[in-house]
Length: 67
Image 1: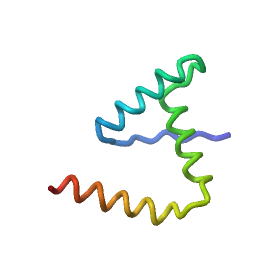
Image 2: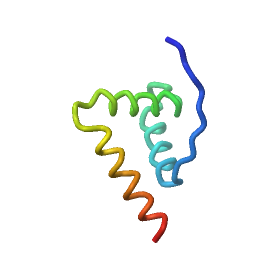
Image 3: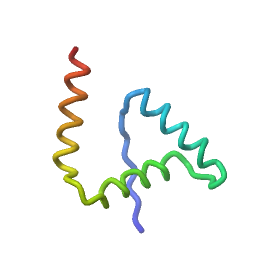
C-alpha cells in the first residue's frame, strides 16, 4: 500500500481529542497518523452522504471562525 505524506492544520481542540485517542490506544502502540488514517477510512466507508456532511461542517466552522 502506497502512502502519501500531507500536512494539515487543525483546531487545537481536535488535536487534544486526537491526543486522547492516542492515549486510549496506547496498548496498540498506535501513532497519531495511524489513528487519523483509521478515522478517515471509517468516514469514507460510511454510507451516509459524506459530501453533504463535509460541506455543512465547513460552513459551520467558517461561521464560528468569523463570529
